[in-house]
Each structure stands twice: as C-alpha cells, then as structure tokens.
Length: 439
Image (cartoon, rainbow, N blue to C red; front, side):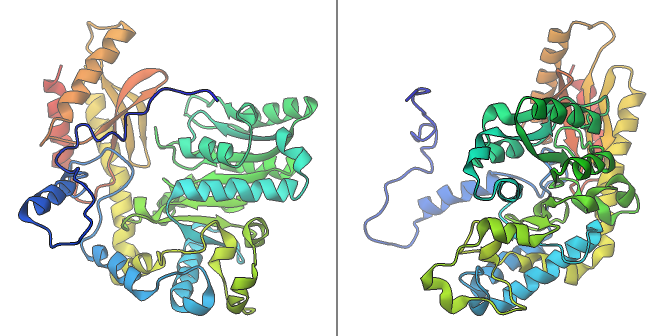
C-alpha cells in the first residue's frame, strides 16, 4: 500500500504546555495543571465583535447552559422508550425548520453533529434509493456538484463509496452559482458513457462567497431526470427567517434532502447540525437495522427511534439548546440578528467600493464579502497575491481582528463573514482603516 510519509501531527512537538503523562492514580488538579487547561480559553475568541473568520457564530451567554442540561437529562437519545421527552423536543424543532424552509408536511429527519455528518447521511440515503441491494450499479453511480461546494460534500461521496472519477465537480457561472444547463449536459454525457447519474448536490450559501445555486431550475432538471436533489444549506438556510430570505432560497422546498446548521446562523452552541428529508422513509430504509437486543425498544405507531434514521445509536440530546433558545428569545431578535449580519457585509462592500485602492472580488451575499487591496501601480497577479497575503497577516495579528482568506477566480482574497451579533459599523470602519494602513 502506498504511503504518504510520516505524519508528524501527533508527535506533540510544540505542545509542551499541555502534554503530560496519563496518570495511573487520580488527584485534584494542581495550580500548574489549571494553568495548562486555561490555555483552551484562547482557542477561539468567538465572543469578540471582531471575529469574522468563519460562518460559525458568537453565541448567547444563556445558551451555554443548555448543553450541560442536555447531558444530564438523558444518556442516549437513540430510541424512544428511554428518551421520549428529548425526542419530542427534536420532533418539534425539526418541524420548525420544515416550516421555515417551506417544505411539505411529512418532511422529517434528525439533528446531527454538523453539516459533514448530515451530508454523508444524505449521500448514503440517495445511493440506497437508487441502488438498494443491486451492488453491480455502485461502480457506475455518478453525482454532480460545483467547484464552490463545501469540501464535506466531496468527502461524503468518497466515504459513501462513490469513486472519485464519478464525482463530477462542475464549473460555476459569473455569480459563482451552479447552473442547471451545466448539470444537464454532464448528465447526458454520462448516460451515453454508461454511468448511472443519481444525485445532484446544490448549495444555498457557499462558504467562499455566499452564493446560492439556481435551485428552481436544478429542481426542475432533477424531477425530469429522476435524480435526488440534495441542498447544502448548512450556511444559508436560516436566512429564510428574514424578509428577503424566501425569495433568495426559492426552490429549496423542492429538495429531497437539505442540510442546515443551527450552530451557524441560529446562534446555538456546537455541535448542532440537521438533515431534513422530504421522504424520511428514505432515511429509514437506508439506515434501519433491528438486532434482537433492541426488540424491547421498538417504537409504537406515533413514536420515533432516531437511531433508525441515521448512523448513531447513542445520540446526544441536541434539540434542547435550540428549543430553549427560540422559546426564550423568540424569532424576532434572531431574525433581526441574521438580517443585521447581511447588512453589515453590504455596508463593508460600500466602504470597499469607495476606496480606489481596494477591489471587490465577490459582492456581499448572505453576510460574506470578498475583497482585496489593489493599488493602481500594481497589476501583476503574483505581486497582488503576495501583497494581500501580507495584509491578511497584519490584520490577523493578535489583538486586532480575525478574518479569513480564500481564492476568488484564482486571486488571493480577504474574506469577512459578518455574522457576529456583537459587531457594529464602527468595527467595520476600523477594519477598513487597518487594511488601508497595511499596504
């Protein structure tokens, strides 16, 4: 078997402050041990109003209590007889999500650790719906997504047994969207070549630019071609709560499955993802297994064993933190914070366009803006990339801001994701001032 070389990630070098032998006998933590553990507080300063690096968001203080309460309520939420209360909460939360996205009655699903796990389960369900027990089709199964899809989508396909050459990563248009005609042409060519198209994965809010694929046209195509439509809305789903959201996300209600992440734009603590399926029976068909040692916990007609709908038997009671947050605050302030995040990115875009030495690379969408420094006397692409890498490094110096970088049409880009509910226009103003000072 081919080896990629020694992986030094686990050697402990550079982590001396937190590396110590596993004790044989227990003891109360010493002062030095407490200092070591305190380093974890520095890992991710998401409470800072100037943290705009990722789409995960700054949480409410109240909500930090919910995970502790969830863990004390029940040891496992996989089966109804020992977790009927938490399961009822999960059913309630899932139906909230269904309504917010406009999906039909009967839509079901489950909460997950995050979008990556939910994506894997969606691919497995789609694969099972197409192949069932005919393993001879597996080498020919082909799925379609875009160059802007999250890496979890392609990884899920590999883990589900879809060969790498059968994962079609298609180009996007000038607005970074997957178009239905690109999918149609690829499907037609693959059918002629003897492959078996079965799944299209569209995005509703890409990580790079916040782009939303042409969902209505892609849904039409999937209906005509008998393809499973999965929408990765881990990032953008909760924009549906805003006034502009339903039109932006039009077509998502027609998907066979949707991923959404409450630990992003619903402001709940990690870990909390979700998979919704138009026909939850497709999930059960793919995942249900019923050994003799579980016969005592068979669900009744109106009961749900969530272990039958995904890969986990022992499950964390994730619904409480969502339910508690929404019941405590209501939708109005959550909706306002989501809208505020979108508006702050648009405000940042206005500031960038005012500066002759700055350039918008991807306009503000769903709270994401990509831009770069572009002085008038610099036109060489490599020089521009190097300049912006230096700007990015200075911005991210300790005590300043936390933003990210990406590539837009091959160019190095500064990227801000303004979901942090503590952020103000003043923070955006100061960021732009620092950008100007950095080149």
